[in-house]
Length: 81
Image (cartoon, rainbow, N blue to C red):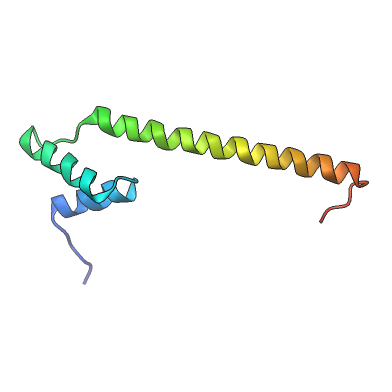
């Protein structure tokens, strides 16, 4: 049988999967329980922006490596290694 968790456990797992540490995930759940049962959207958007900035940084690094590989291969007569 599948492992079924309660709403708070599932929410905490989702938050930790999204990159929040356990303490922050617990705090967000606590805040949602004190309010209307929803997470603070602005906090989630900030985390999303942070993750997307990280993706963009990694993409720039990949682009630089691709450029260096391209330049090196062309300098070596097009041989690929």
